[in-house]
Length: 404
Image (cartoon, rainbow, N blue to C red; front, side):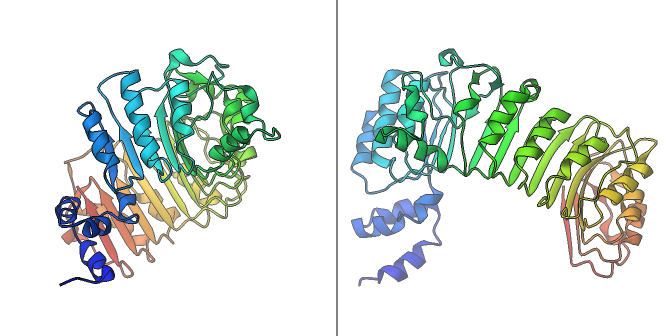
């Protein structure tokens, strides 16, 4: 008895990857259904040191077309033989490949050979070998989206050239939507980084390069349509000034600040579409903060550092963020929530995390802080031990979530 393709596809959709592999052995048609193009979006091909040419030959005879490739070889760099094997795989799947991630370092020439084989790439995270980089060292990057090579003529990156190869290279850098760029001691020129359609960006360890005004403007002018930005390092005023001037369409911003001040929030005033703001501060010294209210911000996340001016801290937040109805607080130094609940009584969602006192039972008085939150609908507790059965009734509460 033969099942209609639609029925079989529906049945197989409930199977795990291991079970799909078993089903695919029944016949060729079942194999094509079990690993169709839709499902292959969720399958990652992992290449490690156990691979050899026989596996590549097996892939060549397979009907599966992988969209995600992950490379991790137990070496600092790819040998010519290993890279030739990867090139063969890219020649097989490159046309359909959406994600390529390599933890093994590539030379710029190898990276270029990867790029020209993945025309529709959406997410590319690679490690560049610093010994092959000879560009201006104004901005350091370790893992990056990079489309240049020392062996490629400069005209490949000029949009007005008549070379079809140049147009192809320009097409490549317009495709990505996300980019993760942790930095170390590797460098290359920011002039070659241009991702006009980039919407999500994460930067880490950029502290040393955040002082070069020219380099920062060159970089952010190439990513002006950012919507989601995460900065996992302490941001200085210059960096934030350049970011808010060049990328005014940001909707979600997560950053670290040593000492937030009035200038910080005055720079944030440029982000008229900002909805989600997350600040991790070393301390809060200048309180209360001065500036125009950030009316578009609905969600605010921050770490609560217990200092003498805690009440002024929340007073400043309340004045600058009047429309916030979703707050996430990371407690530090055994802090309490009295001021948070007092200055934001209209909260609908509240998340509280306490990693520092993990395992310490809090008393039932912990819930007294929520007495002013008459509109609270969702309460999330992370790493907080408390007797929830002692919680007094919260009229509009619909959801209580606890993470141990």
